Length: 392
Ligand SMILES: [Zn+2]
Picture 1 (cartoon, rainbow, N blue to C red):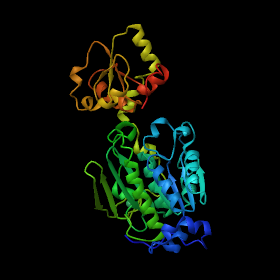
Picture 2 (cartoon, rainbow, N blue to C red):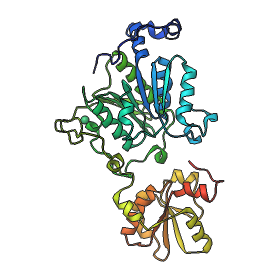
Picture 3 (cartoon, helix red, strand yellow):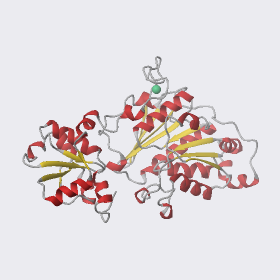
């Protein structure tokens, strides 16, 4: 959908700016007026991770005058495979500060505003209100729905993107002129159904493919050129190297932007998206041990059956000694239940303790009442028992 420019032009461009942005200025559709709009624009990037990295770098290079960064995390070695705004020497630093240093190195003529905090119901409205446009680079459903709802309540447009393994999606949501994220996805997936990138992986360069689409859409919205992705979903398949566009319609029954909205303010997004299902939470109560307790059980010679419920690719990276691999899906579909021993205590673990809790619910329901799972999974084992092992 083509829309009027989101931002009024700045009064002028300096001599430095004219030199720097000359390749934009000579595009007739952008021109001096378009570049002045970019200069006057305030864009917020939620997250300085996989999608935020290319988004921030190119928004800065393009001359977006004010760039906000919301990010509370610190740079980890496992980020560097795709989060190209950070470097080796940034490991351990706040991502927001590392990202700011990178974008100011690319373009010192812009203002960078840091929000070095987790986005929450307490701050999202106040932070979003300061910007013309939001870029959503979050990787979890709770924040994604919060971003959508805050944008709808404030009447702001935002550019959404998501990535997983070889697949990416992007769109523009703006309830005043078209659909919102809830029109496309009214409900979050059930807990445990959709693996995160931390569980399922992501091809690093996919961040650039989808992040580039998000920046392109942002520039079009700010300057009013071209047809935006509002009302269309872009679906990218890196293995096929195909881009498909799917038409999206505003849902008259949408919970927040429909004709009779039931969501009229921010809600409890952790509860709405439930990182762990109710069944898993109930199963884990009183049936959770720590990595230290597991080590003590092993050292004492207690008869236990230690089961790793992750996927084979994760098992190849690191595992707890003495375990055997039974992926969670085999437990949930019932196929693996008959192979579980009746005469040993079953101990389940995964990467972080979420999937093992899901598997625990199924194992206990099958009659293995004394089964337990390991809090924090193999990550906790590595941290507390054997730091020489790799984490991922
Ligand atoms: Zn909607």
